[in-house]
Length: 431
Image (cartoon, rainbow, N blue to C red):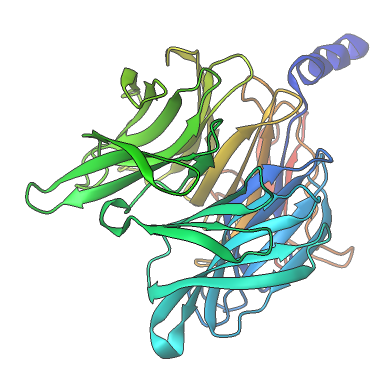
């Protein structure tokens, strides 16, 4: 019977990819906020965000960006922090480059001058800085920040309302100002014709409604066409295998009404083919990103908060190519989910996403830790590993809590073991 049980447990991992979750605090006194993560060429993952050694929270002059490299099992390979020079610095996006290094988009608030700057940092494969370039030091907003390498080995970045194209050394080739239409929607992608596509949302002050724009640029940044959609807040866009685009966003986002996630599919000219809303999600809901999957459908990650209990969940939504729901999965986080980054399909057919949490798990308001999730192809976390952070053998166990932060000794459920050195382990004890 024991052998049969082992076989049954292994089958989901063989057919649909391995799964795990990790809670990581690189240094016990620090607080972390994750913004972006993706799979790397070696099958591992790279993550960026903000870290603070302030005893209270992110947002102090002690804040700076971090870069974390993990292997395909979620174990740390190396981590780097990049101390700020002028003020508060936060990593917004990281992508692996053709040379196996990394390109980081970041934002720095220069406290003494009360302005903010976007910057791009190029590193080698070990996270060592090769060059740093500053752009757009005229405003204090850090919307956007998405970056990717282009086919000519340069980079395209959406930095707040500015679209900037650089060469391989980060020197600007051209830039375009879309400040008037760029409040939300952080992604920009190079398209198959060498141009670019991006999504953005602006508030119409005359009607107190929001307007979402899908904009197509040529390779020189000139606008080819722009489509206006009456949706509240766009989150992401990417080109699909048929040459069209998939857009994700949230209706009723601005005015505090119950938000409703949506997906919109367009053709190659931005004309709407279909739009689907997913109103079975209740409370405050925020879809963070969507991506086309290998079967032609779509995967979306969603942040949800119950407006009565204030508990937060991560919701995974898988649809077919027409936007019809195939499955949904809920990852309960208690009251502690702070940030949820984008989701992507991994090479084994599973999914990877990053988040940062505080509250019920850490029991320290303002202290965030990194939450990494790797699911199988059905969005399940089918195997749970012992989570190691920086705990040593001398660390003393303080308490054991469940997902809602309640002390417990019950088994057969996920439990958090909290130690006196500030580290946390997650275990499932089966009896």
